[in-house]
Length: 407
Image (cartoon, rainbow, N blue to C red; front, side):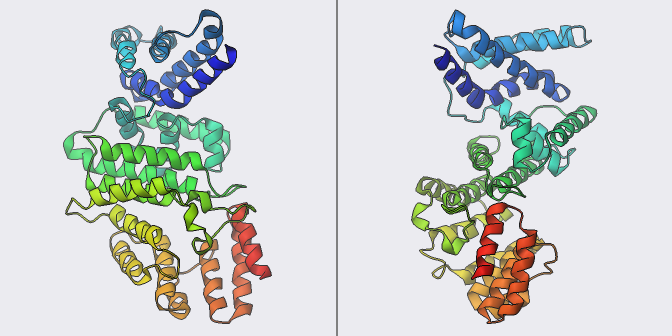
């Protein structure tokens, strides 16, 4: 019985925590998100303590909601808002009970409102991603610290500052009014994109990827595209980009623990289910008239995904799309990616000439080294490979560059 209870509570913690926190936080307000999180964690601990002896209730999630509500009232007891909040929290258990059995983790209105709150423009992009990982994705502080390559104390302090900032700004946990929805929805998409990127290519550490970050980002992105409030061509393009890119996760690192470049990845191992989902979203994204950065990035991802090989990739088209992307969202990352595509389309000399300033950027040095190698300038290439290796952000990338140096 104990093993079954532990399995059930683990499942509820994974699949229901964000929904329970969102429902409670929406009633408590942005300044009390920590109280909502504490209350839900308390409810889960109570379940572990009581269910082995008293039995699992007929509606476990509703039971957790009731215990969390009561715990929240205890935490707020004596506060000036405590009495007023009591009446507001009464409907929580019954409202959550209606969702009993929904473990496909769809985005409900409470989660959507919380996602908009934690991605509020009052917070910095760094705070938005951290807060979204904690409150909406349900990751722990140590998990976030490991994924964002930071110390748990730093993450905890950042969360405290974010909560205070939301409270000081009097941010309501609610879907923004129609005239503010577009800007806020874009902030949400950007936060999810940054979250996905951290999972797909870690900033540093022993692992190149953190798949759980990618999974959560894809889930939330697809939910945004499906939700009637946030469904839009841009949301579908965003979901297409993340799904098509996530399909390559199984081949990002080889069996020997060395990072694999796109040209070296066995494409037959890419996730066909995610590719199909991504293409469905990409098809729906074409219904609008606005061309967004998400459309352009999704098209690039699709061109890579559908090509039989690197040599058969439509590199001229990718260069054109990067030109469009640079016109509306210029950045050194886009400039570097365009130069790599140009080198594949027109030859290494043109790619090398188009590379941006690369000091301190391991990927810029690596691209320079590859182009120089193809031009037969091996001594110069070795120098840039060494610089790239010394700047490598993760161990799998460093091992790849070591291999290139040896060859």
